[in-house]
Amino acid sequence: MILEKYSFGIGDRFARQGKALLQAVIDAKKRGVSIAPVCNKSHREHTITKTEPADVRAEADGAVKALGWNDSYYVDADHINLDNVDMFIDSSDFFTIDVADLIGHPADEKGITTFTNRCSKYLGSLTIPNIDRTFDVTEEQIRAVARQFLSAVKKAGQIYRHIEAAKGADNFVTEISMDEADRPQTPLELFLILAAIADEDIPAQTIAPKFTGRFNKGVDYIGDIDKFAKEFEQDLAVIDFAISEFSLPENLKLSVHSGSDKFSIYPAINKALKKFDAGLHIKTAGTTWLEELAALAVAGTDGLSIAKQIYYQALSRFDELCAPYASVIDIDKDKLPAPEVVDKWSGEEFASRLCHDQSSSNYNPHLRQLLHVAYKIAAEMGNDFLNALEKYQDVVSPNVTENIYKRHIRPIFME
Ligand SMILES: [Zn+2]
Image (tube, rainbow, N blue to C red):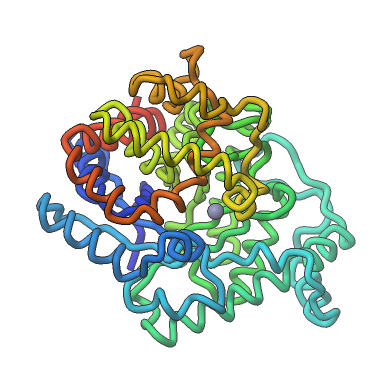
């Protein structure tokens, strides 16, 4: 199974927007840009919404059939580890193996020495094609990378072989993710990590490093955009070089776990992809559920009432909802409007606080981040929420399609 040059990870907490999401990819294809859709849902999301990987498979298959999509599509077991991979085996054909937790775990000294010797040809002044600087590589540096990352990569190998044994090597796509690490990986670290991945014989087709800057959930990038752009381009160059040096899969590409809506770095990504003629996998639609919520708020008084109820409960259960996402949200509680204030809002007012329009003075990133992690409450509402989505599907689904096509696909892959 060979993943296409461009692929797009789309999330859908409540499995009601499969067609609307696929439509965005169809719209891109009509304009000449082929993107493979990848439906992703993590173990964490399944736990919170009480769904199963088979639900994502059914949604994807259903949407593909309904819209007559004849190209490839995938179902991603997002951020899995050895403890939960088994429940994803039957339904998924894309596995995001998350080994960030193992970063910094001690590796055995013998393995570190073997790896260091194996990389000794890169000692001294290392030139990587298309990077306009050289890297001074010391033995101590290689050892330090081995100490930091070798356990994680070995674990990835173990998980990969577990999936391979169950599914057969040619029947799935492998991604290695280290994006939920404490600090970003440098391009040189990425190069050495790829060496270790090759040593483990993992046919990784995508790799998700942690990039410089903050990638908070559902809101824009916070950080130095020029620094990100430089790092991103160097990572692309590193991947090209690593493919030839380590005989990794020809289609190996970067995966950006964006946490959704990193609009301000899209131009830099777009420019770099063109410059390097590179592929990309990007996960970015965890906010589908916020599009649903915004649409409900304006669709009718019952929809608005649901949106407000979810916000009130989110306020009172702040710590519980934020805990699983603590490292990827920054919410200033003082900027969260009180229920008495929200109670007076019209649907348009509610939506204007929530919707990610940074040119609007109403937009409130604190409220948006809180609601982003509040999907648990909508899940608990069960049919009250799902029936409202159904009732107002005509308002909801154009929002979902337009958001993905105009605000994500177009700036990243087209324009
Ligand atoms: Zn991630």
